[in-house]
Image (cartoon, rainbow, N blue to C red; front, side):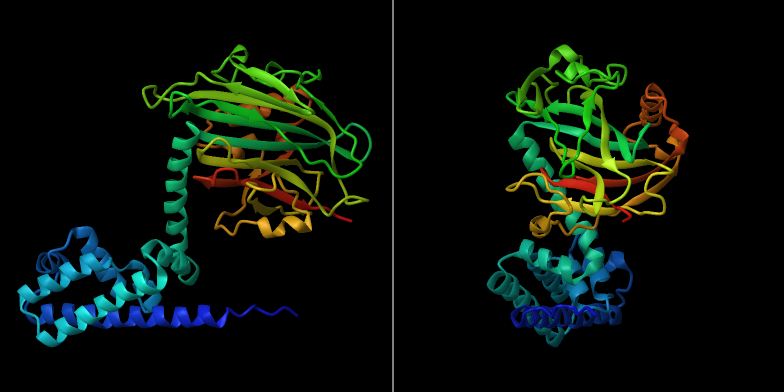
Length: 409
């Protein structure tokens, strides 16, 4: 049996006061609209003129008071300044003094609650995103978009799409599984003259795992030229400066297009092969296997795909794993110490179906062709792949976005 954790008493009390503020605003605005109706002002355009508000503000105002939930009203209603303008317009239109006083008191109560108890409208919006579920998607998107713009400016570089995919196929021998790792950065550009793009990869094999990392051709990986797929990239291999740090390879590009002068930025598509990386069953390792990508550089869209042979992990559905990596680095979903770093977001896992045509991606039109190409080079049948996807718009910079498959015992 599980029990839902009750919120602290302080949180419950704050929510109760928020509901009271929302109820007062509902009653006050409904009274003003009702009195305007008795004066012959019924439709939205005439109400807009009477309140002296913009079309958008009037639409939000009228929509907010139609909500049964006072917290939803509080989430949608315009701020105190626009409400004060509404009250002044209603007074000029000839509503009663009683209705005006009620409206002015509700507006003052809202202002005192937001400024005195909450600390600002942005903080109130954050609270309401948990209390009013239908507001959460727009809240997250709005703030992720602002974070993307800020980090693009600070880092000096950005991409239209960050893409990572893992293709898992049975190995020729034994219980281990082979994997092709696909990585793409599309539309890369600088937002500052000093901006530079740094690329590095990481993998987290299970303890005791023995695997081999190679290029698609089967050779060692010593430089970006061993990974880059020039037929899908617009950036040549010689443009990268490559350095090795232990078992990590890092590539840097400093002269990407600057600003929006170009129709699109540069594209980088690479591939690598992990022989014997994954397990078919749990065995002595942890309970999951899977793939993850990181939102680096700042990007408008991040996509992580899992493409799995139909004999691999049959009847198993992956779960989404979002982690904050800023302080403690990349995370394994089996690590109990990293569960506190999980990000609570509205993203979800989308089943894609079977075969490359089912894996279409609007931001990456050649993706089905790429899947067929890399599979053919290894003698794999791309039509036997089934897929899942996580697509995140304006991913949080540095976040780890992963798909974890619970392994059978």
